[in-house]
Length: 255
Image (cartoon, rainbow, N blue to C red):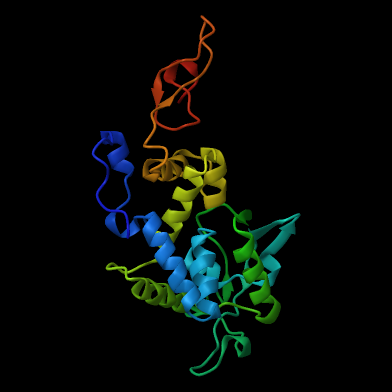
């Protein structure tokens, strides 16, 4: 239920970007099984399982989410990831305490960041839409009665257990869910620039390369060939192939 070998029609350039085995997204069957297993668990299983699947957030980021991160814009819910350092209070502090009675930094924030959490290496701040109203309402309901999620280690452990309950042969990680979310965005027809920003990649070559993987994984688009599209002297669009959907060829400004 996790995607396997790359399709046989991928070019050599596309094969370079094809994710490693441990980073592959779920198949449609895998998505359904994982969501069912998330809903069959407790309220935190559903929050973590469906929440990460439908936001693409990394487990460490999701673990530090608070109610302040949630923004309503009409009928849509967004998760705004802060750009500033925030105090980490996700740990219960000692064994047996619930997260609602915690308020201590997780071990990574305590050891590496003086008790604070910040997002490194990706765009910050940024807003991530929650695409399904039912999941959006569940996230809001959770934070109406809870002030934190849990530690990053607990998030990853719960994802593994949900995957086992769903019948996955391979261990499920946050990377699998993140790749699945990016693939969903590509299949829905979002532009590469929108996907890049939602996933938190910077506007540089590396960021575009990372974004390109989701188009390669998109089954619905069948690994399309991208063309320059710039107007030529004859008035017709340029048909030269380019690597990324929003690029132009070397004759029309591509670096």
